[in-house]
Structures are given as C-alpha cells and as structure tokens.
Image 1: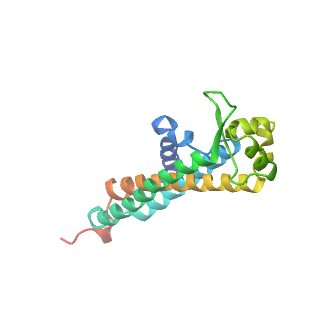
Image 2: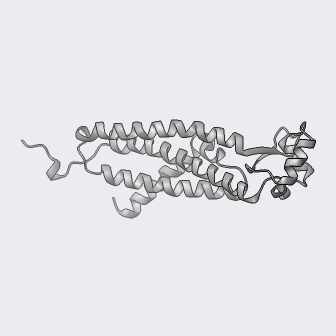
Length: 196
C-alpha cells in the first residue's frame, strides 16, 4: 500500500471515529464556536498521528508474539480514557453555563474560575441569582469578562481543551491498539517466518 493510500485509509478511519455514535465526540467538545472547531480539529489530527504511529509500530509483527503487549497497552489507554471521561464531564459541568436564562435549549458557554471584584459584590447582594442571570445582568455573553477575569476564562478554556484532547486520544489509541495491534492480520516478513 502506498503512503498516499495509507494516509487516505487513516483519514477515513478518523472521519468515521468522529462521525460514529451520531457525532458523539464532536458534540461533547468544549462549547463556543472557535473553541469547539479548534479542539475537534486538533484532536482529529492528533488521533490521525496516533493511528499512523500505532500502525507503523505494529507493522509486520507476529500477532501471537506481541498480542499481550498490545493488549496491555490498549488496556492502559482504556483506563486513561475511562478516568479522563469522568474528569472531562466534571470540568465541563463546572466550567460552563447555559445562556440565555430560562431557555430550555440554551447554548453552553465557558465561564471563568475567578470573579471580578465587582461581580463578587454583585453576587453577595443577589445570592438568589444563578450564573446565567448574572451574565445577563452584566450585558450578556459578550460582557462575560465583567463577571470573570479574562485570565481565568482563558485558563478554563485551556483546561477543557486539554481534558478533551486527552479523552479523545486515549479513546482513539485504545481502539487503534486493539484493531492494529491485536486484531489485524499481518503478513510476515521473511525474518519473522517461523523456522521449518
């Protein structure tokens, strides 16, 4: 198989991975247009690199000889994927909020972790208000830096991006180790042929 054919096959696999389960991996990406596009795009490219690396590492190896190694590696990635799933979900719930208020289909937006001094005072005066109401009172989404410091919003975006990339790469690597390292049939090189 030529390098071009291999790359096309790998891109098809990554496209399938992100489209599978009704686009689940795309739908759980950090919210907001630019964050989501960047994170999904970067994760797709990194997953492609992981697939090609795993495919190259498993190429022309005796399946039985390395099966336990590939199973161990895939199990390690599976554990990372499982843990990162719960961490990402917790951080997604903590670092995002729905807007506009009172909308059942509200879009989610990234919030900061550190309130501005003015917002701290406002919340003390209005403890009954939720996050969406407070953002609305400050002028809406375009003014959310009046509620949280811009640095804390950037840190929240970075944290969600890292969490998402780790989740996607560990899931993809689990699948690729299993399909490329354990389940794939390989042609044997002459040096790998068993002695008669």
